[in-house]
Length: 393
Picture: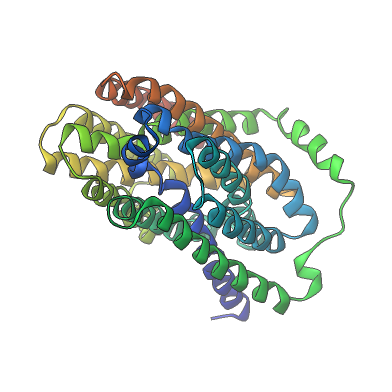
């Protein structure tokens, strides 16, 4: 194994820990919504602001982290973002009312925005395209694991430790990740940690220039729609499991881990799936089909076993579809990859926040099955257009 490959793997592990903590903090509130609503005397839909606030801030700040990563070095920005997450998570655990909790979740989202997208951009810089799908899948393994742990631990802490303890634990995790990233940064040659670039304003001008490219607009558009349809539904799956299948908050969070298990099954065998299904187009079609099936079964089934299987199928399909879009994003503007990938993440989380706000209107009216069904129909149409987009690449 070459020295370069070893260095890549070591860097990937360190960034993977930060990505793990980022996704854990992002999804941790999903199984908490019922408990937060009870504690602060609001509806579950109103409590979902803690999810959408994180997503909105996460999306907006992508516009700034891309240029920062390209100018000052991606690892340096990732390490500072992880440190900020540690601080804000600690403050979040001390929130005295829902309004303050929502504000601090927004700050956490703003800080976390600099971790996963810049890690993807770093992979795009360091790894050749023929190995990039596999390497991005390895990074996804860390983030999916973070999502799984966040979903389970959020429900467990809400029932047994208190939701404040969950944020304190996440703060400690981010602190460890920030320390490891900083040590990694100090061990690297200066030439690899930063680069001479034009003015900061030029990066924002470059973003608008990229939006003039048809393929960039296409990738960003389908990404925003994907975020609205899939992530918007995902935020309320634990609530749906609790209401329709009469599962406890802890068990609903544990069942949602199967969503992540599906993602891990894909990520660990990414290269093989690519070969088995005939390339990226086959991944998109299979992934979209699994999402549609999973959402429909979840919406209308009343058997807990089927609910569990649908979570697995939806997660498996989503990561198959999403990782293909991530790979496309790393290649749509190779000369400004940091900016391009963070634009991708920006549109993804704008879509997510929009989806959460829309589905929140249905949760208090007991309309979640209809929302999931509409999302399934949307994914079916989306899969068709993405398969054509990938086929033309």
